Image 1 (tube, helix red, strand yellow):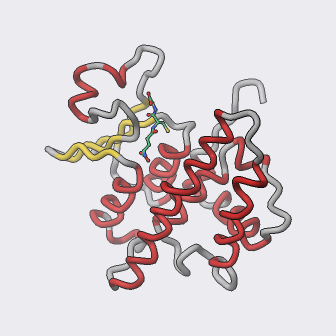
Image 2 (image 1 turned 180 degrees about the vertical axis):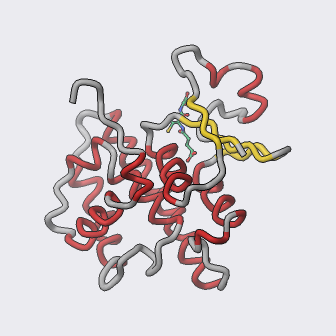
Length: 193
Ligand SMILES: N[C@@H](CCC(=O)N[C@@H](CS)C(=O)NCC(=O)O)C(=O)O
């Protein structure tokens, strides 16, 4: 298997962190955006969206980071990160969709709109996550792909700058996630820092 990635962005980091955390046999290729590799015919044949990550497994070209996470968790069941029981699985799916439908757009807006207020955009979301994390070590109880999907966003530059003091369960969970092997091994330090 081969992952086409661009390690410093959260949608890529979540997958790279998952691969490294569980030492999965997946090769990682960093796409060269300067050379517009993602716009080449070869790349667009894999992903017509021209975006990373893309996982190639034989004749399958899989894009969308959360689909990649659930695929990897299915192919590598030893990770125990995607429950088989329908209700538990639905809970994990719910949080994956929450990340892509709510958290990612809010974070995206903060990056592009300088007038956007982090507290107004993120606090309502983190309060919901905070309630979910009450008395739990991980978002769905046991460590799951949802933790990787969401944590990658809280560990971005923007996510690191946020004040989590009013959402203490999120703060504690985020610290736990940052200590996982996969996130330690994908921690990016900007040159000169
Ligand atoms: N919903 C997609 C988003 C993928 C995405 O936006 N990838 C960005 C990097 S995080 C990208 O490749 N951008 C390059 C471009 O749009 O040209 C996912 O979760 O995989």
